Image (cartoon, rainbow over all chains, first blue to last red; front, side):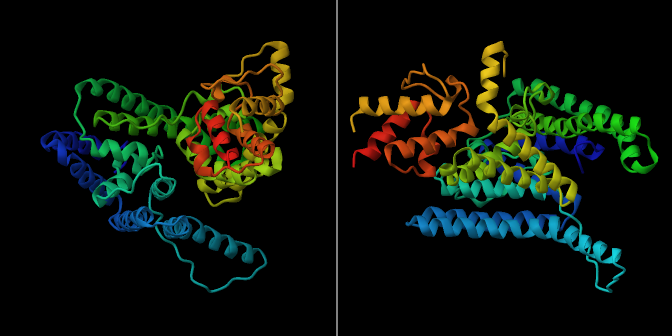
Amino acid sequence: MVFTSLNFLLFFPAVILLFYATPIKFRWLTLLVASYFFYLNIEPVFGLLTAFITVSTYIFTRLIDKAEEDSKKSVFMYINIAIILLPLFFFKYFIPINEGIFDMLETYDMRWGLPRISFLLPVGISYYTFMAIGYTIDVYNEEMEAEKNMGIVALFIAFFPLVLSGPIERATNMIPQFKSGMKLDPTNFSPGLQMMLWGYFMKLVVADRTAIYVDAIYNNVANHNGNSILLASTLYPIQVYADLGGYSLIAIGVSRILGLEVMQNFNRPFFATSMAVFWRRWHISLIKWLTDYVYTPLAFSFRTYGIWGIVLALMVTFILSGIWHGATLGFLVWGILQGVFLSVEALANKRRSKLVKRFNWSQK
Amino acid sequence: MERKEIIEKLTQVFHKTFDSTDLELTNDMTASDVDNWDSLTHMVLIGDVEKEFDIKFKLKELNKMNTVGHLIDMVAVKTGR
């Protein structure tokens, strides 16, 4: 079941009713049950993965809190991150890389009779993996204490509005909300439903319709002329924005109705005035995650190299962003390009601000 | 080190890092108050501050510094040894 399925339109009102019927103290439990029902409905085996990540994260965050020395704490943090990343690497990267190797060997007419394994990729794995890692690092950085109730941790990781495609939220934001007792406030219904409606419009009307044309071109590039390819390439960002932006809006709206504040994921990205600004307005939750947990520690380590340390940190961060999206060469090149764009902007920063001052341009 | 001295030296570092000659530091000042001060240049500033005062920050400490006032306090603590 996904947001745009009829099942969800039955599921969600049922959840609201159950939510209302549950005493406030136990509403987190209702949401946990609902979230696992939602996720298992897609494929029962996937629930094993979220449960596995939950148990590991619960244990290691508690160990981090209990440890006395920083060296022990960081060991626990790294172990949990490695454990969580293993399934992600396996499902997302091992299989495509394996296939890539087979394909390459075939171009040299080497056909090995080795088995090609194909597994179902657990939906949402890229999202809740990152959320669990973020939580682990936050506990290590003493941004919050490890949650003692494993059920709350399980809810944080499997929370159904966010589990499929984000926004990638923080434990520091969600766990206190889960624990403070969620109220069904009628003043949330209208904004929440509006966001859902707008999200459905973006996804079903704009994204899915645009996809008809764009997919037709992209799946058959050799047989289309430059005009079509240009048009498809121009429409594609709009399609992606409507797709992910719409879906995120539904997620935020659903959460709002349940009385939960989830972060904004898009902020009129096409009105950005530079690539650096664009990346603060597009897929905000992902970029914030990468900034806080990858870019900042890297830039900090490289700070003795001045602006070139920044460039290196940017390249690593955006290459990671690229391959997070998918295990293809296209995504890798895309990530490199974004790193280059931001590096050029960073290097040209002083010269650009002189121009801005001279001609009085606004740069928000 | 005396707080006044810290502020003087820090002002110099800010001028150099952000290429501005008239910036005056206040305790409540944050990144949004200064042109060019964003996550890209923040680390460069931190590196320059460390070099100027011969101190080293920890990443955890950076996360807790929200204003220039906090930065001055941190520098004071680290140079007070």
